[in-house]
Image (cartoon, rainbow, N blue to C red; front, top):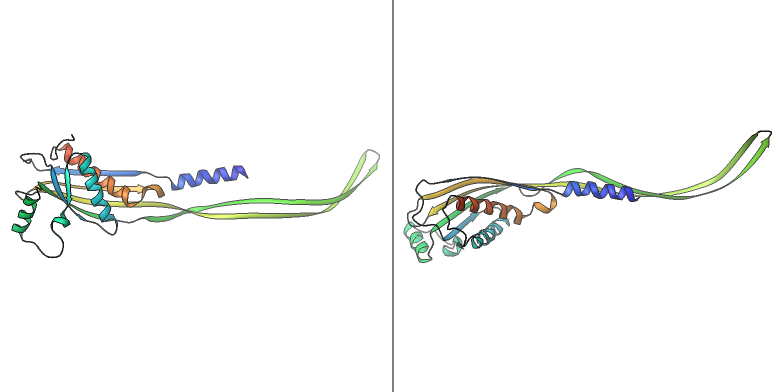
Amino acid sequence: MRGVLNIAALITSLVVSGCVTTSMQGYADRQLPSKPIRHIAALVSAPGALGPQIQTSVNEEAQKRGVASQDALIIFPPTRNYSNDEIRRGLAQNGIDAVLTIQVGDTGVISQYAGTIFQSHTSGTFTGTGTATTFGNSTNISIGGVSQQSTFGSATPIYRHSRRTEFHARLIEASSGRTLWIGNGQVSASGRLFVGDRTSASSSISAIFDDLQQKQILSPTS
């Protein structure tokens, strides 16, 4: 019985375990900003609860790198349309150096049937009587009895979880309106522990900020 349980636990571990793979390609304008970007406004477009989690990840990642970050929708509430002059004035009043727009496409969590683990345990009793008759060098044995057995089992379906998140990002200089950087990438996650909103969001945003900093667009980490 213990051997069966150990095998079941091993199979379950293999099925629900997983990993996260992030790929990213970014392109910076040949003319870098006159000074590194230190204050950004982030405008996020993402499905469901992933949007707020990405906005949170932007704030956390920016803070790690010594960059200030604000939600663009707080500066410009989505209650009406804004003219270009209003946008420029609002960005300047809030000290925004650049606007980071992020568009996200997400498959959500996909569950795929991966098999069933069956566990069982059998117990029982046997009651019997017998006779033995000897003739010379041979012995005949006759045994009769009653056997009672009970088997208990359980079947547990196992599912493999996966998720794919694609993102498209652009960094726009607030003073001139020109595009400083564009980037595209995706996050592929598998395993129950790795397919949540937080993993997809943090992996996407970390890749974006890594590329921005490698290309010397953001101020260096203090």
